[in-house]
Image 1 (cartoon, one colour):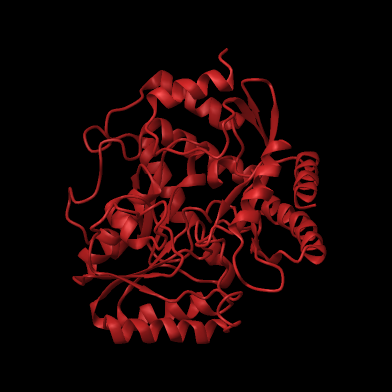
Image 2 (cartoon, rainbow, N blue to C red):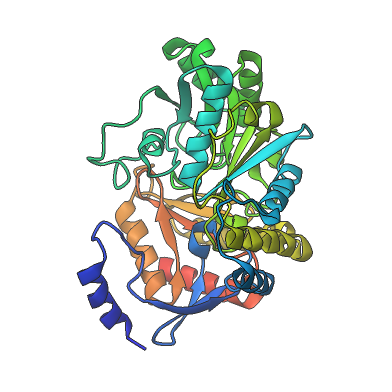
Length: 423
């Protein structure tokens, strides 16, 4: 087998430079909470493929389901010759997502594609043009979703012009907005919408219940319910982007459940299919069915192999109660992260929910972001065999997304490495 150095040389000659990677070691295999590179070095995984491998890599049920489906058929295109597994995934999503109302689902390939289709559905159903998004938001890399995303570098820089009728309003960011309570922060956002856009023009209000790339920002309690109430009152479609927060990651099946918020539409991807590419929009039947026949779809959307993986992943989440596992992981990690924060003045805040946690790093005694120190801590983790990710508008947040099947020993070893990296 080629070494990582050899593979990296081949990569430099073959792969576009614009595609980045966190580390330069190349993966040979992965399972549970670990990744093993081609040199045989084991890494503790605190990334889970950016919240994708929630059920772990090579989860037994997923492997068996994929193997069986590949032997039967790999593709017919659901729009040409449909099959049961697409329908079964939609049935599962309709039952699992928040809200007791009648729902429909449609399947796609990626989170960005799901977001684009949610916007299409909202605009078609309401006849309105405007989409409201939030500071620090991340919704994807396509032209429309770059417009919806807040961060310029590396996602938007010199890729414009972007899609129009997108309006950005202030997010509830307790560490950085003076500790505004949720209701006050929501009123600020709503006032901005009503002044700059006009409520009667808003097709969709799109928000991540906990922001991902923007820094794992958890809005103050009451923020999401107040926005939900405003959307209902004004006829705007409330869209929850649960792409990173979904499928047990935050300790509930979906992050909106924490405050009892029932979105009109939910966008889903990442953890849905155990690592295979699949995404979805699920929501109110009257909104989803408003679109004319042929208005939604795509050649690979709801690929049968990915659907088989999704059904097996959902079964695994239920059988292992991975929502409870996320809460248990969160309890262990939060305790250790707060201990680091108590002795290290660079840690301004420990935040998150379940197994979606982060620390924000600043210059001691200030709220000035320190992306250099953040990168240094992450690099020290990598050198010691712990895979971590950074994020945040200012590049100063370390985020932690371990697989929900990580063992207690793997979790403890990873936290020991993190502790030493800060020291």
